[in-house]
Image (cartoon, rainbow, N blue to C red; front, side, top):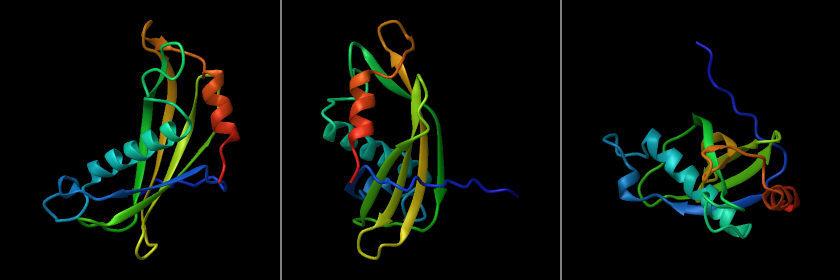
Length: 146
C-alpha cells in the first residue's frame, strides 16, 4: 500500500514549542492522531501572531484563511508533558493560497514525531467566498525566514 510522503521545504520560517496536554492523549496513552492536527493548529496560530496577525479569520479586510486539505505522517509516539518543537515553513504559493508545512520533534531527544502539510486558501468571510492572498500576509510570509 502506498504511503503519504511529505517533503519539507529546505527553509524554516518559524519555530515554536508546544507541551503535550493530558487531553491530547488517547486510550493508547500517547498523543492521538487527531491531536496532532490540534498541535499543528496551535503552531500555525503562534506563527501568525509572530507575523503580527491577531487570528485566522481577519488577516486584512475580512480576508482570513481556511484549511482546504491536511495530511499528516506519523513517525513516533509522543507522551504527556513532552515538549514538542514545531518547525513551520510555507511554499507552493498561488493567487489564492499556499501550503504550510510542519515538522514536529520531541525537544528532549530530537526524535521526529510527525510531519504535516495543510493547504491554505484565503477566504473573504464577509462574502463567504475564496479571495486573493492579502498583500500584507504575502509580504510577511516571504520576508520570514530563520
